Each structure stands twice: as C-alpha cells, then as structure tokens.
Amino acid sequence: MRSLRTGLSLASLVTGLALLLGAPPAQAADLPLRDLADAKNKVIGTAVAGSKLTGTYAEIAAREFNAVTPENAMKWGSVEPTRGTYNWAEADRIVDFAEANGQQVRGHTLVWHSQNPSWLANGAWTAAELRQLMNSHIATTMGRYQGRLATWDVVNEAFNEDGTYRQSLWYNGLGTDYIAEALTAARAADPSAKLYINDYNVEGVNAKSTAMYNLVRSLKERGVPIDGVGLQAHLILGQVPATLQQNIQRFADLGVDVAITELDIRMTLPADSAKLAQQAADYRQVLNACVAVPRCVGATVWGFGDADSWVPSTFPGQGAATPYDEGYAPKPAYHAIAEALGGTTTPPTGACTATYSVVNQWNSGFTGQVRIACDGASLSSWKANWTYGAGQQVTQAWNATCTQSGTAVSCSNASYNGTVPDGGSVTFGFNASWTGSNPVPTVTLG
Ligand code: XIL
Image (tube, rainbow, N blue to C red):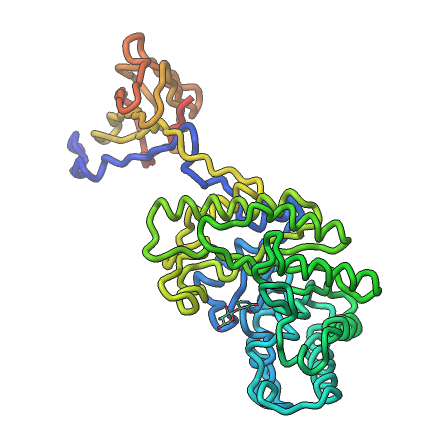
C-alpha cells in the first residue's frame, strides 16, 4: 500500500500559472512603424550602414522600416575612391538587405559638394570634363541599380542659407544648369526612379526653401524631370519650424512629392525626461505635418538609434537625436512616431490575474487553490474558468461555488468575496481527484 503522501515536497507541487485579464501590457498589441506607415501609404525609412546590418540593428531596421537610405555607401567617395575603380560592396549589401525585407531604397546621393573622392575634389577640370564626369557618374551609379531603387537624391545641398547657389565644384564649373543637366541624365539612367533635390534648413518657409521653391517651379516650367523635394530635417530640440506643413504644401502644390529625408532632432547632452518628452512632441509635429499632406510621401530618420547617429561627432555636446536609445530601446520619440502614423500606445490600465496552484497532493487526490489579485484594476464579481487536461475532477470547493462539466471547471465567487479591490486579492480552494498526471491548467477570469 502506498503512503498517503507521495513524498514530493510541497514546493514542487506548488506550481502556478497566471493569466492576465483586462488590458495587455503597453505596446504589446502595437504594430511596427512600417505596418502603420503602410496602412497610411507612407514611407517610414532609416539611414543604414551596410557594415552594421546584423544582430539587433538588422532586426530593428527590417522590422520597423519600409525604406532604407544608405547613409554613406552610395556617395561618390564611397563608390569610386580611385578614379575608375569602383567599390559597390556596401551599397550592394544594403540594396540586397532591402529587397530581402521588402523595403524601398532611397539612393543618396549623386551630385554634391561633399564626400567626393579627393581625385575629383582636387582635380582641375574644364567645364567639358566636369560635365562628362558628372553625367557618367550618374549613368554608372544609377545604372548599376536600375529599376531597383525607388528614389534618388540626385542633387544635394545646392543652396546657401540666403538662397544663393552654393559655390560648389559643380556650380563653379557648370553654372546653375548643372542641376537641370544632372536631373536629365538621371532620368535617362533609370526612368523608374523618382528624382529629388535635397537640402537642409529648408523645412520651414525661409530664404533657402524659397530659393528651392523657385528652382523647382522653373524646372517644372522648363520640362526638366523633377519628381520631388527632400527636406533633410536635421532639427534642434524645440525648433520644429511652425511653417513646416505650409512649406510642404507649397511644394506639393507645384506638382512634386515631398519627403522628409534625414530626420533627427538633437539635444544638448545629457538627455533627461523633459528633453525626451519635448523631442517626442517634435517628432510628432514633423510626422503629423507629413501625414497631413497627401504628397508628402513619408519620413526617413537619419539612423534609428542614438549609438549610430552622426550627431555627436558632428555637433559637439549634442546627441540623443534618434528614436531609439544607445541600447536600442525605443524612446518617447518612437512612440510619438507610431502615434502620428495612427498607432496606439495606450499605457496599461491595470489587470486582475488568477494564479492556480496545487498546494497538496496524494495518491488519488489533491488540494488546489486559485488566487485572484488585482493591480490597477478591480472586480465586483468574478468567475474563474479552466479546463482539465488529464481527467482531474473537482469534488469539493470552499470560498467559491465550483461546477464541472466534462473537463470544464467554472468557479464563481461566494456571496462574501465577489469584490476584489485594486491592490487586493481573494483566494478560494478545492479538492479534486487525479490519476496518472496532474498538469496545471490555465485559468481565465470572466
Ligand atoms: C552624413 C553621415 O551621416 C555621416 O556618417 C558622414 O560622416 C557625413 O555625412 N546631409 C546629408 C548626409 O545629405 O549625407 C549627411 O550624412 C548628413 C547631412
């Protein structure tokens, strides 16, 4: 004859399973940014470095964004460091990554005054040579990815702050028409790519953005191919221009698309909760402005994590400019972007949980208990339901009325313990029979 006790320790019998009732934890049901953006027919992109596309960085880039921009990999100095010797490895890697993850690619950038190879920047070129260099660079680079890139920043940063043309290699050698010529060459190189001109400090209505506006208007009048205007949006905390939406709208009214192409919002370090809240408000304002204008195709962040941002090395003392912190945890700015794209990030409203445990077990029977506890929520009556998976049968209960039909057990409160206040708990117990095994069921509250 077996002893009444099985010899198992009490601790090993006390197994519990809790199930949440009520609101799920915050963000549990929230969609990735790219799903929210897709539903609004918007782009949410990030700049990426090809060398970083592994691990957490790659996971977030793929999960959250429906577009990528090579941060440096397609710049002239990257692809042709020595004249006639091309290096496409990093750019290829980014395009392959994007295609594997169903993402658009924004090509960046073809004609710029910066990050050119020194052989180009330091050369003494005639206008004819410069024209040939520019056009063949466009043909070669766009041609390599023909049909695979959604957009190209063809000309980057053509203007000074006062709206005059920047005295660049291209302007000095070819005059203002280098822009029209570059766009024309770009259309020929990849007719399926949307062609943009892109600049910074053109987010609000100001002298520089007005110069850009006038340029786009004249390009359109002349029939020069131009599909969009890129507003880089390297912004300073608390300084989103009040005229952002109005500015986006005036470009849209010219018949071109608008994209926020390099969004980041920097702050004086160290970050604190007030600054992060302001930053979230700023990101929200930028995204809201874009969402409000149908021709604003979307926004790309210039790196999604603070550890990868160009800001700290470029603006001493500034940083924390992106939606994820240095450890890739989402910041308030992330949630602000999600909300602007139509997501909900409702904080948890609290929940009541039911925990089932076996407190004593012998050869044919056991004593069980269910504890119902509330935190941030309350109950005025309750039912605890579970299904037995191994033939267990409740024989008797206290502090609840339990019925069992087949494998389904339903226990409702007694007259005196239906109320479970916020922060409070009630416990009821029962005896039951078992044979073979006694697995712990999942309890749901109803
Ligand atoms: C920056 C990159 O983020 C840095 O890694 C690089 O050292 C310099 O360029 N405007 C642009 C981008 O169009 O190409 C620049 O990217 C940031 C400003």
